[in-house]
Length: 329
Image 1 (cartoon, rainbow, N blue to C red):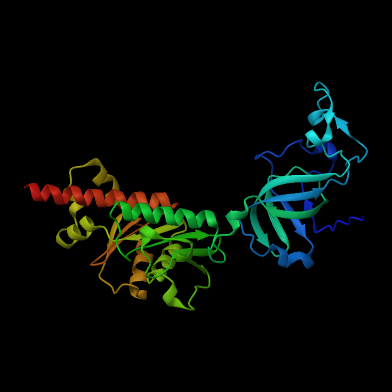
Image 2: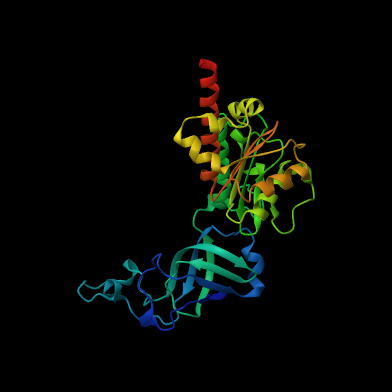
């Protein structure tokens, strides 16, 4: 029986000689690149940045006559059969490398970590956990980011910041905005409830599928370079307090109130989902991180979903303290 392997691409690495190459991959190694033969481009369909895959290489400088060796080349360790080691010297010098995909640009795939020399042939790719790839997340949505949005939605709902179909959550992934769809309960989000649109060329087809406040999220990202995540909520106490007293933070004798009021801003009443509201919030985001929307709700941006949610919780708790303080009097 004849066996024929097809080379599907080559690894581009900083290591030019076998003696330069580390024995094992470590996370302090620089990224490497898989230069895929263009005729195999369609085979990449379904893989995205963030996925983990096994890369199978043909260790072309391996000695195929070797059957035993010192593990990791350490002569202080007794020789063992090569099948119990990862030595490149073996009857069939196939390398197995678990890597994460960082980027895919046409036939150039950025991967890390991998310990092979430059121009090592690649013979196959396979997912680490097959079930991980059988998700229903839409195109251009990294499953890890999608899962974080789902988890944050549950926390925001559990903490009473949103209810029913209210609120929306988004994250920047590369040059795309991942955002919750319209009409979805944020406490019960699943993989089908997220969608993406281009940051530079906004998604405008089938707009009913996207959150009604997608323009507001987009304007924040355009105006505030530090913003990587945005959460829009409808916190009960804050909405009640703002109707009565917009300066409530000045009247709370608390260190936390003094701390957060410098990041606190209010925009005038605009119709939800309107471009007027989006522009006003985008402009306010240049100098404020916690933004109240009159007769509407709250929006907070942060460098992460955790920060955005934490800011939302902090300002709601301060509003609750103020409300209860007034009630006691």
